[in-house]
Length: 239
Image (cartoon, rainbow, N blue to C red):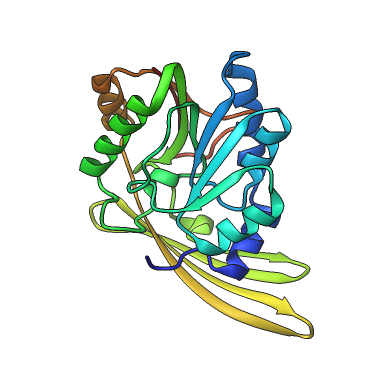
């Protein structure tokens, strides 16, 4: 596997980009019945969602592609289990709830990140879920904005600075995020760069795939009080 979200970017993501996970954890807590206790968190990142769910009393297993994210999560949430794997390759045990928070299905980290394999993944997750189980995830659509001030951003904190550029290909179906990070180490800054590519899915496409499998779905424009940005959509799918 190639390495994405390497150590410095993994730490930055853990420190500053966890609000979505916090909102999702509260939503899962609200929607789960009293006997729904097992959660599979695909694309678990640094373990923020897993930690919150574990604190709510859930039994959580996290799966992530990045070894640095898995290492962070294991240290941060020792009461949960974390596995390094592609979400397409992992063979999940039966569970009550599956989460994929933070555009997980969009990332083109391996050759299986396409519509055909996504349909196969959804079918596998449907079979994995216990009766009345929940699949909660979000994704980006071709409506996501990449113009103007959104195309190039500078984000600065006390111990790091990040330069991000966004671009869509000619088809409007692939988003490229070019990230250059300067992370402070003592008196110097360590530079790293990652290029993340994401497939953009139409709402109707994913809705059709899920409903054909047998899910009952609800579209979301937020997980909590903070609305998603344009082109960012959430789904709750119930078995």
